[in-house]
Length: 267
Ligand SMILES: [Zn+2]
Image 1 (cartoon, helix red, strand yellow):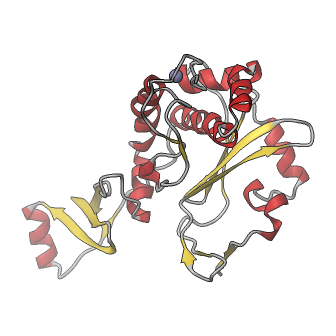
Image 2 (cartoon, rainbow, N blue to C red):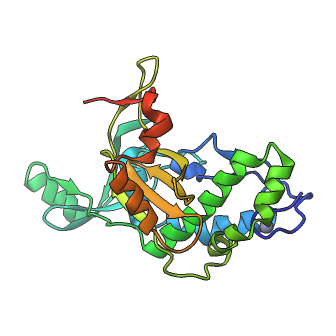
């Protein structure tokens, strides 16, 4: 068996690879040992996923949406007790509306004197582009491998396919620092959806692979309602804009084969 990134023999590898990290609520999209070798798996965990997950924007999304990491913890956030006292916010993962607020004694004196107060969480902005781009490249290659790994010949030809070398190397070595991606919000991050049985669920992450009529391939990921798209074929994203223009700007996650999608947005 060979690794889909470095193409080296990976028969001895033991680690499972999460296409989307567990800390983003993914428990099901997992590749078996060897599809990604242990060395690449370790590299991605520390050099690609960790910097992405530790950006203020992602920490804040996980905090607001109460998505625990694999140890069941939520990130701690630095907020502000108005008018300007630092406040450390901690939430209980199992009870999204309860938690702790850590305050300095002078802030507590202010709270008592003013009979209450308001804590705000400063807006963290979008995560830095270089972290997002490599994170997407890694997930894109793995999402393709997940479609193919049950057939070793298909997986082999994907591993050998030169047209995917550029995106592999972008994920694994970061050789193209400004590889572009497309980003837009497709639904409110707190939107609740209902499944076939009418049970309310919250979509944290989902993805699909889009193949256009002119044979370009795109990886489309929705993370907390943010749609992130990268091109398998190289560092350009114009083709996705063209697809959007031709398809009424709908998300590929909810069009075409998904026309009879069991999920529908609750008003
Ligand atoms: Zn490898």
